[in-house]
Amino acid sequence: MRRSVFRGFMLDNQALLLITALSVILRLASALYQGDVISPLPGVHDQVSYHALACRVLAGHGFTFETGWWPLTRAGSPTAHWSYLYTIYLAAIYFLFGPHPLVARLIQALLAGVLHPWLCWRIGSRLFGNQAGLIAALLSAVYAYFVFYAGSLMTETFFILSVLWVLDRALLLGEIGVGAEESVSSWALLGLGIGLAALLRQTFLLLLPVIFAWLFWRLRARPPREPVRGLAIASLLAAAMILPWTIRNYHAFGRVVLLNTNAGFAMFWANHPIHGTDFVAILPEEGPSYAQLVPPPLRSLDEAALDRALLGEGLRFVTRDPGRYLWLSLSRVKEYFKFWPSSSSGAISNIARAGSFGLLLPFMVLGLAVAPGRSRAEDGRQEPAELGVSGGRLSGVVLLYLVTGVYTLMHLLSWSLIRYRLPVDAVLMVFAAAGALFLGRIASPCVSIWRNCCVGSDTHDVR
Image 1 (cartoon, one colour):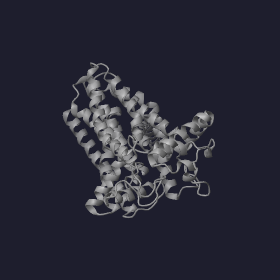
Image 2 (cartoon, helix red, strand yellow; image 1 turned 180 degrees about the vertical axis):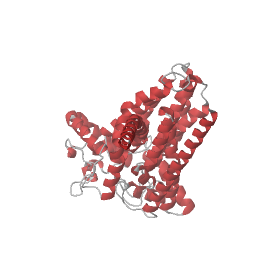
Image 3 (cartoon, one colour; image 1 turned 120 degrees about the horizontal axis):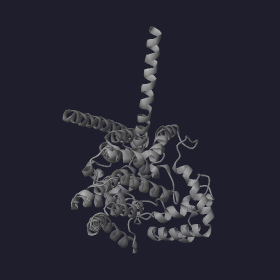
Image 4 (spheres, helix red, strand yellow; image 1 turned 30 degrees about the horizontal axis):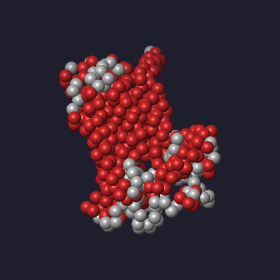
């Protein structure tokens, strides 16, 4: 029995290593394909801004642009529109190796190639068993969007890794917190992941009430002071990572800006009456530009003041015509969940979209449907000491449901693009694995019956 368990453990480890190697190879190939130049490829135009901003920081000009820049930042004026953390990452690479985007791409691809399948394996194994974890790791390793963005100089890849890190830490704390004394380091690692995710994309902060509420509920059997202490540790560490940039913003703009100046721009442009009730992801070139939509009296404001003013205008769009806002938000579903080829996209983009999200979407949906049953089945195979309480895995599934739903709703109510869905795709890899495993277990008896029938028929004919 021990020999069988050990052999299974070794085979699983070998499979994970092979999946990781495949993941690294594909992502390095993506980085090499995108090369040592910065070009506005479809869906990754933001890397032009990150490259320019990193070069300005490295040259000693701070977080500014040499010329007028998106969204409406004047030349030489401070900007807080872009992720500070990712800009510093690029500036550090350029400082060490010179302004070579390819080096930054390769380092990012290598980190993602190792960490992405590993985190998916950890989460999938914890909720649905090791076989599902390996399938989740494999799917994440070959998923076209993840491979492409791993070589692109944008926040997507590191943000996805941070989200998976936070979920993995939360699930772990939800397990050990019931049956064992949680450690300060475990909560600190959760806080570190939260801080990294927020510094990469501040919208992550909207998920914190959901994650913290789940953890508090999961640890309800413990004395209240223990989860409160743990959540305080995580919160204080994340706040310590954010606070320096809040202070910087106050000195730069003379007003409090927690992290980035993009919520107002997104709310204004995403809900502008120009859309009517049918959201347009990218405005056509022949129409008015995004800058032209901004009222002229507001264009003289600095970036932070403009962001605040546009947030107010965007909210007024909603309150003036809530019916239009409802239909407009519903129309964003087709852009957010687009999996079919489009005439506005190139051949490679259409193939990647249909061959990644389009191919896995049925498995994701099936996995979402069968996940509660699968998690209960896995609970039944474990010793109580391993899970702390009955239903431990089911509660983890609930956390992923909540995070997926809230994050999706955030973008359906504001700005929806396919790349904004990628963190959700990363979570759905776990459910796709559960769906694929479910289908495999259903199909296995059918295949056995078919084989037996065929063998029996062939034997009868021979006789």
